[in-house]
Length: 97
Image (cartoon, rainbow, N blue to C red; front, side):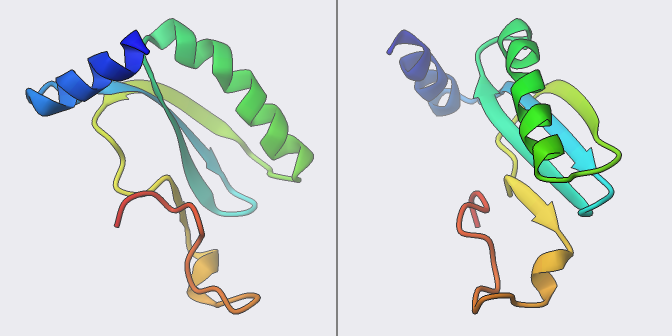
């Protein structure tokens, strides 16, 4: 609970930065953002689980970066949603619009 309160107050008073994991894949051509995390160590510890999940889904050429930054505009970015599949034109959990 203390971490949530800390992030809220940080955003409220302009600090607004947290640790995020950025993962890029070539197949599918996507950029994913996972977070926020309270520390670089916490993000680094979680990174392996996200990579493992993407590998199990068949993602190829996975590149990662952990950085301290503001909230990403979108949590998943891909060109593949330009062509609607299954009646959806955008991802259900695509972050803030």
